[in-house]
Image (cartoon, rainbow, N blue to C red; front, side, top):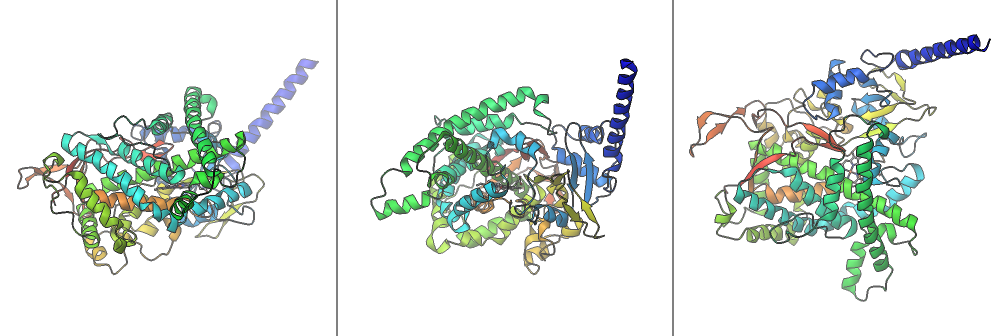
Length: 592
Ligand code: HEM
């Protein structure tokens, strides 16, 4: 008697499950544009097929871009990645992306971030990180740290950025001498880590070993590098139980980082709450330092509890990571694009000459710094002095072509993005720009895919995929008019959200001004001093013609105004989006 009943119940359950599965796979989001889905795996298999067609270790965004293109580039594309991922909409339209990141009645601080991505980042940022908080908790943290990232205040770090930049130049000078190929991303990563250490916790992290400080440990950066490499090549946000080995390794490295930071937090707390400054000079120093992330976290904390130490460490970990990783990526792509776009390199150099004066005449013109008649540090120090001279105080912020290069690099090679988990039952919908149709996104992950949005031909012209800094110059700028025959839009700000490397809305990037200052200073220091030459992926093709030194001339793509390369460098995923080969380069001193 019992057996037939159990069998009937099982049949009933199975058929209910089957109907439910059919509903969620095929009917629940049938209004959204999508590729054909399967009952058991949704779009997982299809996505896997696109990943397989990609180049080795390519960023999953490349598969998403291809899926989106093959679907006819809709404003929203539905991707059902259950059971291994989320049911998501890929946002390919800037207007909808803005609707997702702005504040609304339902979500005053914009919809929450995806818990799956946050869990994945847990070991990098910590549970109480500003990146992971929502609502009032987030608002309080953001308010506190905004003080430390106000543009006026951030620009006071220019001398420190220059000092760290000079160490970077020292390292590049030795690579000129040796002629060795090197990973530019490794060097820019250590440079930006050194800088962020100063900004976030007033510390010298010794991340850049040189001849002079070869013994420096750079322990934190070494741990960060190992931690980030434990994220190498992740293509899916797989659950922890499918990546147990990696998760353990991440946890062990995160614990070591936290332990180093805990001692810094305790030291700083003792210092902050010791006796008050005795004279004006010291007071000035204390006031400036009081705006570092570390000081802002501790200044109203009379007693340090273990919880406060942990929470402060989470903020430090977040700022140390977010503040160095993306900026180093920006710098390595910027030097790469300049190296293969001669007109852009000449324009940057001409702008720097016009604003700061030409490089010191004693600069060596040979390819090796060792044959220099002046010590390398002499002319870089002259450059430092010029960049800091009172009459040039605001000059760094008035380099329109250099800023256009930075903007265009971030458009073509965006390092990050945002994904929001729209809670079930929140009744959150977006309006499609063309039809005005309202689309409910409850229960879905909304992914603002910058690789798609930044390539929108409606916003950036038919040649949206080309690197054209001039598109950001004013319409009547002679350099814009003469530079290229390509169809390159802006400047009219018809759709400001079409460019969103720092994302938009209340949860946009707090560090964007710092990133800009760093990029301006470092490019200003290095762009005239060196010629970067890509090796391996992205190396420039040469033809049969030779120049006056007997070297084969590069092949020029006349339409794009760029040197032709073999296989393009492409991005991989290592938490953020990075050049897959670490941007392998050789470097020569530029002929002045
Ligand atoms: C080129 C450089 C940079 C890029 C492209 C970039 C990009 C972004 C993006 C897209 C977000 C939103 C992330 C999300 O919604 O999940 C973000 C947030 C954030 N960024 Fe940046 N970032 C850069 C530099 C920096 C720097 C230099 C710092 C630190 C000093 C920083 C600190 C942060 C923090 C703390 C957040 C979280 C803000 C919040 O939730 O209130 N970023 N960044």
